[in-house]
Amino acid sequence: MNQIKLFIRRAVQGAHDESGASLLLTVLILAYVFAIALILASIVVLELKLVGNSVNSTISIYAADAGIEKSLYTVRKTNYAQYYTSLSFCNQMGNIVGGTPQYSVSGTLSTTSGGTTINSMGSFPAASTTCGSVGATTTQRGLQVTF
Image (cartoon, one colour):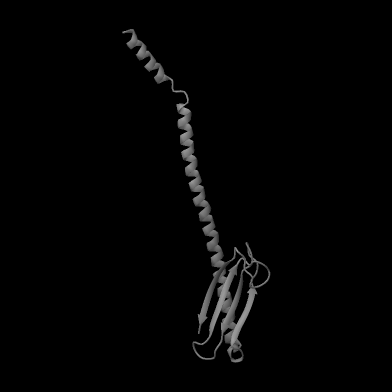
């Protein structure tokens, strides 16, 4: 009988000896919360990069469109195609936040219908003040018009 009492007493004392269990549980919960926070932070950083790229892309396509519009104006208003068979120029636009947009235009001109093709490449931000230069972080978009 004494051995049973001794066994029960040891079992009850062992059940109450849980030192460190709550600390271990707390550390595991904090590690789980930290992992979730890291995953969410990486998603946010990726989304911010995508938003920045879409802004640069929009500015680049508008710069290319400006090059097309200037080319069409030049060709149609001055009868440019009667005197030249090609068109090539580059222009930097006004500074905006984040850099300078630019466009470079090239084209083959013809006096016949459907023979004139104009290509315009818009870039943002410009790598330097030299027109036509692009850097590793430059976003480029192009347009082509045939008439």
